[in-house]
Length: 190
Image 1 (tube, one colour):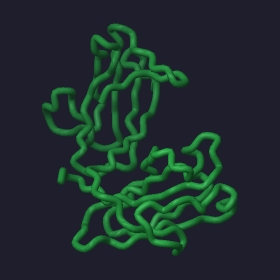
Image 2: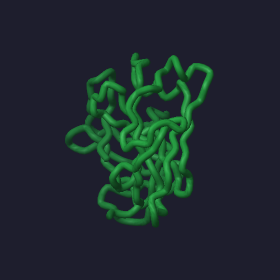
Image 3: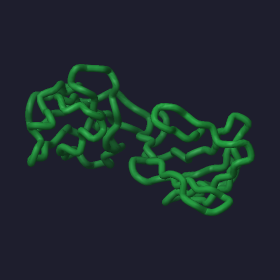
Image 4: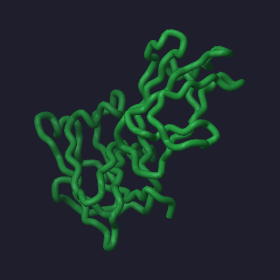
């Protein structure tokens, strides 16, 4: 992972000589060369010649929750928090439905922010034969911009995800219909 500061849509490089402390809630951090066991830190890091912090994330399992914390090594002040999301190695999407509607691989539109006000909706699917891994529920705008965003990692054995209007917080200014799909994910490469 290479990390730089973002202000608006512009990346700002760290100054030469900057040192950061990186920590995680559970052991997923590795030093850049991958030596040593996974740790939750803190890891002391110096920026590279490009003004980036470089470290590895141990992704041998599906990571859908948790955060990495970045701080200034000089004064121990927190700088930022980065959400950890490694959904795993993706398989082909599987059929699912919203609120018992049509079962499809890519569920198109039909659920808008206005419809969700005060209500929750369910995305449901069936476990494929022999599958024991987790799932990622992905969502994109209803007009089909092709930008699928992972919204939730659902652990193995579960076959439902409930959502409400807070889902639209991931689509700045957009309140129109959404599309959904469910993708099985494996913690080990296929």
